[in-house]
Length: 408
Ligand SMILES: [Zn+2]
Image 1 (cartoon, helix red, strand yellow):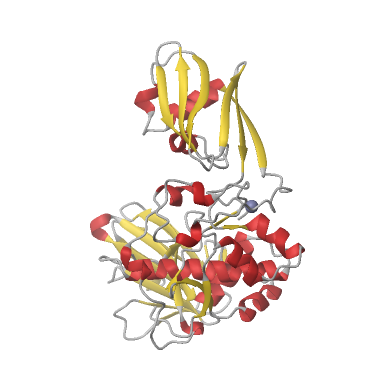
Image 2 (cartoon, rainbow, N blue to C red):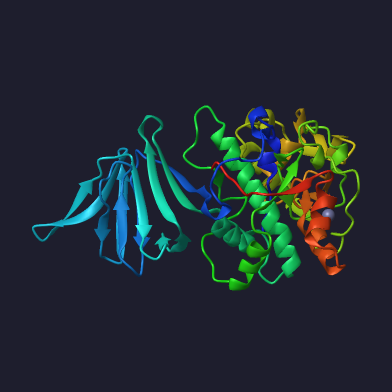
């Protein structure tokens, strides 16, 4: 949550029909559910170097390996070039590169902890090339609960109260399983289930805050469902008291629990509940021009004379902004402004004005403002609410289910 901003997801928000099939029904216990997290994606034509380190020996295998290759060195650099994976080997006392006869390399450590480019991970690292697309996927496959345990530190703070860790554990577990299910139902499945960034949920590898394990254990297998289907448990840093039910750009029929009618005012003491950003006009126009989707609209506009919001929806989300310039007038969508001003605009609930040679933006909330409001939830914990009541407030009409069987 530290810089939680899933607006990109909101812009592409849609619900594939198949996602809403029933809660998983197969024969594995939750502890054996594995999630594949995309750590990075690169062009596999160009040279890439990936450093693997481990205190203990580690193993390499491909999907076709009969036996694993043991690497006794504590570190190894895997090279990727021209859609080929290459590892260093010693031959006749000389250092050589061996081309792996597969598009996929799996790297296991004996103690299940491995460092990739300096960051420790549990589980295994998968390097997968799709030559036709010139794509290299760097993936961490690990147990779902180990993943959720690591997500907690990236999405909220380890110092936050225990009950809040439970809220986030259930929400993040549900969110991950939802995306695993989305991937499972794709015609052409992706090599990963979920991204490690704000686009989905933040994950920065293994940590050692052991006390967070209790939140995982105490909510073991617990997920949020609606009509026996897995909920899309969206969350953001601060809702700014917006009422999601008033938004007009989401398909609430498929996810009625995101159409919360009750306002959350519990986040109002958070520093970004209200925010103000000031940017010079030159910088503002430069950023707009650099956004390739709108460059042609901006070029040749002359001097910016006035700027203001012309349309908002009932929830207060900016739909349209007008720029009056000396040579032409320009209409931009709220999304286009946000897209150009990343890190400046924290939500789409804002006003924008010209004051002298500056642009002044005043806004409320931080994130897409749908689902769980983390700052609000934390305040509710302080007021004595338990994690189930908090989740029911932010996702009205949902239930809790135990993920006893999983098909992933
Ligand atoms: Zn809130």
